Length: 614
Image 1 (cartoon, rainbow, N blue to C red):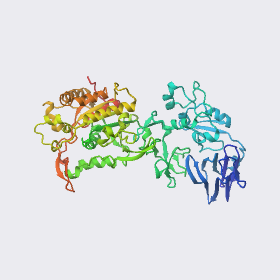
Image 2 (image 1 turned 45 degrees about the vertical axis):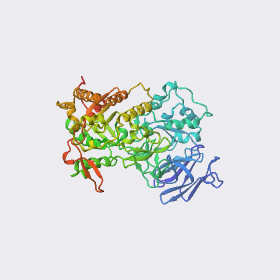
Image 3 (image 1 turned 180 degrees about the horizontal axis):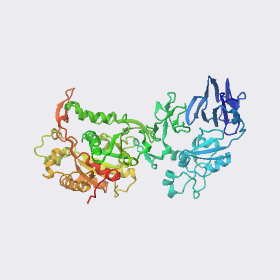
Image 4 (image 1 turned 90 degrees about the horizontal axis):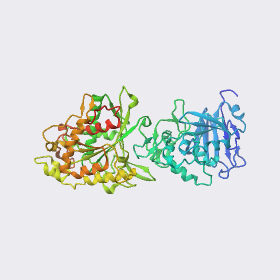
């Protein structure tokens, strides 16, 4: 057989029967006229018809099956490719090879190799019975890293969870109860001390399902749904246009799948053989930012009442951090995914590049606005805020790089009636590296009474002040989501930011706030001194804010901030509606970056040098 002729080599992985096909039509099924007859109660008379079209082999299945781990009824194979099929009670392997003689010489060999995709090592060959015994030693999480490769195949195999039923592989071992949490996260090798595998009469499917949707443990936290997962759980996103239709995301979404074959650059290949680099969360299936698995992530949760100025604060903060971090610490602060951050970029540009208040005005973050998207979470479709993710790195220490994740939540999402499984939009506070509560003094009656002679137009607007209620609700949510006793406190850095500092600075006295950065170092002693002054003022005017904040965390700091640095102005928008918005010519942000630097000095001390707080 010369090297220019390719034959389709076929293997029934259960029986070891091998065939080859060179042209015309080849039928696989339970029918008596089948070219490869398979015996299974689930197998139809005609399971698949293979037709040679030019150099390609076209596979048409009579019902949906899993090809390379993704559901389909059709695929095309080109010379040199390998594919696997799971369905109708069968495991079939296809190899379009120039060496069919080598394939057929294996006879009825149905042995297996096992490839560990994380450690990149091979085990085997194993006979069918020994394979079942060997796999029985592994936990569910460890099995996710294993691919079963039939003898004769080199690139493609089967996931354990796809082939368990057909190969009669025992269910995963059950680790002792006291080590279940860490064991599922880190186990990748057999544990000689583990309990024996359960019998096949036990409830196998629920155990598998529970492990696959386990959201409490894992190396990574999804920045969209905030559930955890391990590296091996991340899903690939198909590229070929025919692979549309994801069972959880809908008909227009590209399929999500776990790759079992890769090109020579290590890129995953979809069912049609196209390389893909995009990854998705295994829980909500939303696309993850590029390079997500390469860097640690820190979620920064901004909490505040409706119309407290969170959108303005976030827009200004991003602008300030880009310059402050580089000028003082040599740290680059850049978009992790510019296409996903485009809304925040537009808000920042609109605020700083406009020439009039009408153009600089940022609309209120609506609950169902462009800053939210509908995704599956815990078996239901919910609205979740889009994350804004930024990469931070220093050229001298690239291994210390990390990402920051922000959200622009509608204030209503922090109100007591807005937290449920159907409306989980603010639950990121429970997994945050830092929580930032933006207090609006112009919402507070006691604060307003002390601000004599202030001409800010916002002071004319009277709103019901529920900011202490929102803080109390924040405490309830965090402790509920983390399973804490009501008397316990988290140690997460909690920044109370008293906004619109330009309107009430006189209440702190004539002495200016101490600088937060000096000589490329965050002065924690200055932050502590500033915090004490702001806290003393809040205790006098709004003691409930202090009490609620310090009931949440044992690590609270108080800041005076002003994203705009000047009072907004009144104007009529294009529809003639009265509005209040910033005058872009008067922007003068004050102390906006201080809370973030305080949190970063704790979350990433190797990147943000700081002095002692004492």
